[in-house]
Image 1 (cartoon, rainbow, N blue to C red):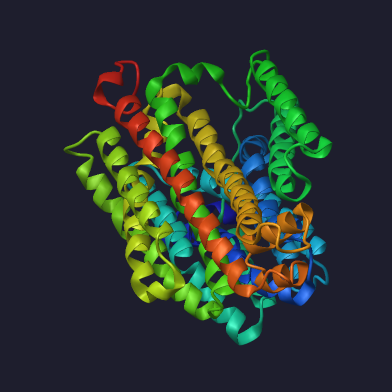
Image 2 (cartoon, rainbow, N blue to C red):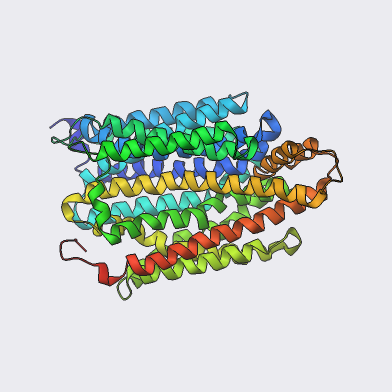
Length: 510
């Protein structure tokens, strides 16, 4: 046994392993929510189209979500420490490049690179940490990992707002590079290398078709508000995504060790677990991105003010999950998750009625959304491995993590497209035929509003006026909340049924 292996046998060595992986988990939500707070500032500094600004967040989420399962497979085959270290190095490099980016398209490209590194670091880091601990110690270590991720979500907007106010938007990414470097400093000396001796070659057909389908679908949804849903480009992208998805399903049914074991979907509770991150994506994660854009770009608040307001939405995610775990001793996961989603849906509907004139009243529905989303949030990670037979727990975890992250990117793309489309339609409805602006200008203005770029929306349709544009945005946002709440309500009903005790099976480890 070499010296590096011996280090982790000591308490301080094990603590360093946890610290390294937790630092990686801390910087990921900061990159996610921090970039949203910084998008208006990036737009003011670098310009760029509405579509390009939308990709600042979506490029990261797309590569991160689509490559998680791939990264897990590579870690098992080539070494968990190697992939973790490589992933963090990639993340740090692209974070540094972002601090020097001189165009929005370069920001988008580097954000995609960040997502590649993040996927490798999180998948391999989690797998490496699992090798260091057993029993209760493993549970405690992963609890710390989940808490760290929650802390990043909760305080990411506040930290990002302060950084932007003091040092500019580039400081967000510089901070990510610093934290990533610290993760490497603790991880390289202490992590032991480990592999799965039974790991097979990468499922390349699955990787290519899944990533391709997700990319084309996201691109099509984001492009639709600008080009129109009936444009050949958008139709071609969405048809291509559907074709690749079909090929992915065929490919996974024919390989010996697929990325996605389709037979798992015969378990109702497994399906129910996959719905939970989709529901929280629509009812919660979407708002983590959209509300900072509204506060800073539309309502004219500072980044610091926006970050402080966002605490009302994100802090409950630190507190409520532990309550949900305690309640799970007395109530089924379906009841807890379903009630939580109904609470979140009520908060989303209330949020849609809030205007800038309401002031701090907006904090109340945000708290309700955070509390409601916290109940399924606290249960779904553990459920992902307990709703399938024990021998399939590893694959179930990989599928769930991919569903969780990929669905966040997809739901954000869908919600952004809906908001942009509704914004353009609302402008047209409010001004009617009283201006010379055409439908294309209205669509572009709606896209700008959706990214919090009110200043450029005014330049696109100067004859409309600031007040009309703000009111158009608020009307579109209200209509979007109806969509988000509807998805949450449907998911709540499905949770009551799919995650109920009657779907427990003796062959499923609970």
